[in-house]
Image 1: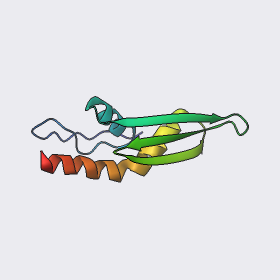
Image 2 (image 1 turned 60 degrees about the horizontal axis):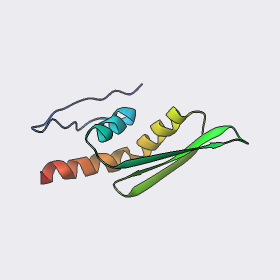
Image 3 (image 1 turned 135 degrees about the vertical axis):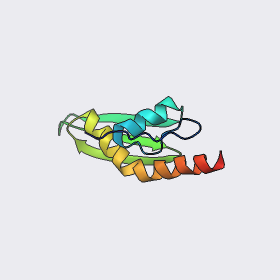
Length: 91
């Protein structure tokens, strides 16, 4: 299980969330995200697509929707954190 290490700045924004905690952080701060899930009835596996900050990530072949979200967030983590850092320095 991954944990969210919160380091609060003046505005109370977290800078070191990972995985599902990072996704929750984006939702709580109204940062636009779009997650779409799809189920392959033949192979009995889940796939999905995550769009955040205008960039789309895609994954397939996972056994659950939770695994899809975790994998998508792992792929997008460095990009998301760099955008959060950019917002932090421009605020």
